[in-house]
Length: 211
Image (cartoon, rainbow, N blue to C red):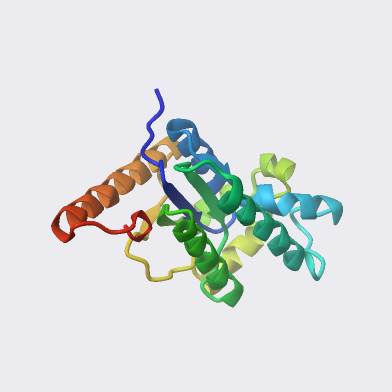
């Protein structure tokens, strides 16, 4: 039986390549009936036609094309998706990149436009475990980054995006299984919904997207 706890909810899983965003997002959707909008669902139509291999740098201009695909997906969700549908998005967003801050705000605005609760989950992972995960050959099939060197450099020089938001939570997945991470996320979702319900009762009502 599906857990419908993500109805009217958009969860954003943020983490570096290799953190387990897709695996966790897929199980989260299997458990709840939400729709998975993985970053590679959006990236790979572009990555495929530029022969991205997960090791060599991507050509200039790739991310501009990816943003165009993402904008089309967001427009489709906003205009055509059934009311009440839940979504799980995955993105690699970095603190140092202004475009990543914008991507976060774009999704926050989409959630508000769809009257969905927006819940960002920062997923962090220890360096050695992240390097082990990112080098998994199975990742090649989805055109994912396979470079432990890039993962190590990113952890040393940057951080997973941390934009202030009342629903944001940080989850250390270094020693967690995917199922354990899903349980932790569902617990956080329940906690956020309970807090919002209490506020609703005491304040006389507010938009779903605000809680």
